[in-house]
Every structure is written in structure tokens, then in C-alpha cells.
Image (cartoon, rainbow, N blue to C red; front, side, top):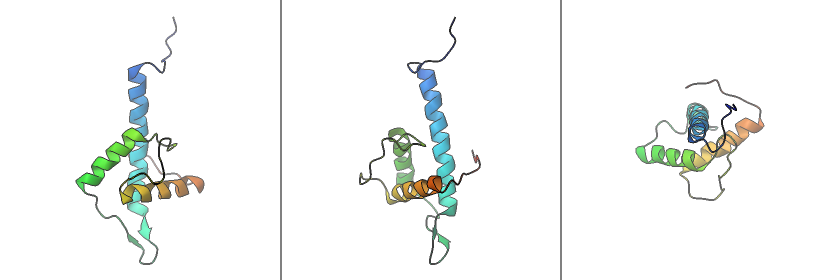
Length: 102
């Protein structure tokens, strides 16, 4: 009997989605705690509002993470998410990684 999980298994899809959200949140927390104004060396996002959290949830449902498949430059996202994607791309291209925060 084959016990492998197939793509059509909703549990497997949910598990992969949860892993993707966990990875997204790890990087997002890293972004919030390191994204600074280079002139003043202060954090640019000291807090985020409920609308921005809802936008992050929508982002997590729309965009595959960590590949960013489904992300479209120029699509309306909150500025914080556009800054996050730019920061993330730079982080990945630099080969930096973040510890598992969650």
C-alpha cells in the first residue's frame, strides 16, 4: 500500500500552506525588527495597524512564500508589504537567513 501524500490531499495542501505562512511570518518579523532608515538608523515600522495585518493575511493567501510566486510588482499592496518584498528579495539575494522565530 502506497502511504505517500498526494497533492490532491487537502491535509497536505493545508500543511504546506501553514509551513509557508510560518516562513512568511518569520521573515516578516525579521523585516519589522531590522528595516531601518539609513539616514537616522531608526526602525521605519515601529507598529502596524489592523488593516496592515489583514493585508498581510491576504498577501499570505495570494502569494506563495518563499518563492513569491503570484506576487505582481505594481499591484496594490500596502507600502509595508512592498517594502517587505524589496527587503526580502535583497535578503535572499545576499544569502542572509533568519533564525526560526516561530
